[in-house]
Image (cartoon, rainbow, N blue to C red; front, side):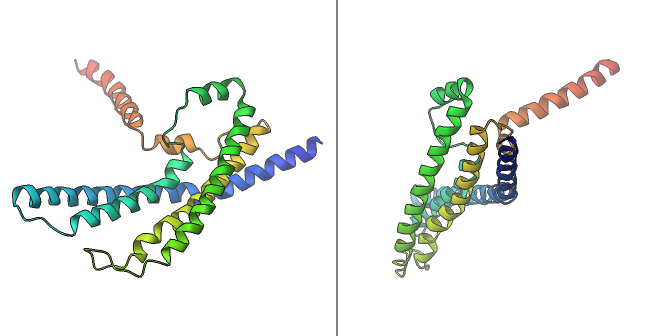
Length: 215
């Protein structure tokens, strides 16, 4: 029994590591792409305000282009948000449950990820059907709507892979293996402001003895 349990646990670890080698770098790339689109969208909105309210020459393409960029930005950032658990949530109950009964918390997390997989599958199905209606052109841009309708089913398919990784992680936790193999907390911390604050404090601590010596 112990031998089979160890084999099962090692197999789950191997599956999660294999998935993590793909999902973690992919989520970082997609997040950076989303950040670039956010910057472009901000510039377009500023141009729109400038031309509409200052020059009194409203542009026809700015509103639609910024809306399309927001759609792309949202879907591109979705895998990173799902991987690092950065979605909007009320965590005061789950934090207590995770501390008191971590295995029960892992069971509920597994149910949540399985439910998310079903939602993603439905989303992919309807998104793909909607993609086939994209032969029409955009109102103000010379592009067919295929380019806009394709992003939901594609990114939902990518996020489905992330959900499978979270399911494997929850299964490990249910069996008592709580090691963070995916290093999701570390991945999320790379883009947190707190990390910058810690780096600045470390630099201050390094320079402080030097300043005292010179004094």
